[in-house]
Image (tube, rainbow, N blue to C red; front, side, top):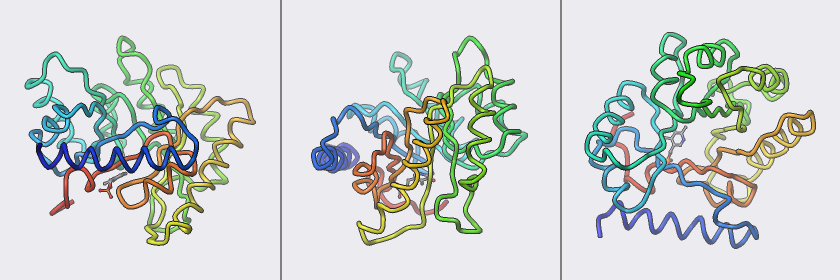
Length: 233
Ligand SMILES: *Cc1c(COP(=O)(O)O)cnc(C)c1O
């Protein structure tokens, strides 16, 4: 078995154990394999082990990888998620080549993605990134501005608002890891009460996926636990 296949099995076991502990079905949590900085060959290895959803942070790198992987696996439908910062002049290729965008934090960007999404592809799935830990340097919309953004994004034609995403400040203590995840879940519940249906909480990475699943994550974004340590970013 390749290292990546073995790592995927270990991550799978962690997710399964967390689902069991939370009395959630395994099918409630999607594993997004974050392949940023790793070559197309790493994606092909993960795909050979059955992984179908991949996340990329850097647009040009992601586009090159999507093309290379499509060429190598013309008959395998993979799902590509954009999870990096979005520059407003780079929205068109995102809207054209990705299935999901997790990092929408401004209406302007959402409007451009909606305008530029080729209608034949169906709606682009969107998560709003929330600045859950309140760090000045971190991206994401402040929680108090979220209801207004959610309402506006939900009304755009070629997008489907699916839920919320956050990257909390790293914590080692599993109990502390759960606090911002619980907060994100509550924010999503507030929005749902206002009449906007959401089905996605994109939260949890290699170091905190168990805590995220315990608090209701529906997508965990896992990179280094699958592909190994990144040597640059
Ligand atoms: C890199 C990255 C991940 C994966 O992080 P790991 O700690 O390697 O699992 C998840 N989400 C986002 C937004 C990232 O940039």
